[in-house]
Image (cartoon, rainbow, N blue to C red; front, side, top):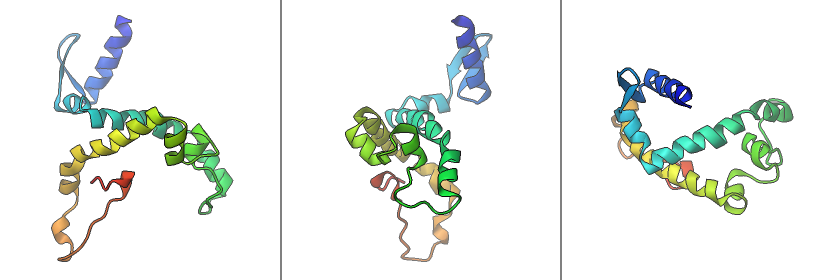
Length: 142
């Protein structure tokens, strides 16, 4: 409905995703333009779908592990949310290849955040010859 769209856009403007340039007229911001990029779009989709749904099972996971480090036979919050018999990568490759492709695109989308990471951490403070490794996503995206 028009009212619902108005509320959504207003909420996005409050979070600087869009800018309200006149009453009920919105324009893109740098943030909304970035969200249009395939990798970032996929990363947001993954975060809003799999991550949030998995988060709903985090307390169940903690109860099962009784606060101890989990063993490999305890389903992760992701597994509890989607399929208790499979881990994330197994699930993506055998059950839901569409989500798996989105996850892969999203991990590639983290490349757009590289300048932010470089600003957040002073890599020059590391001893000469240091190696920084990021294993996130299995492709070394940083």
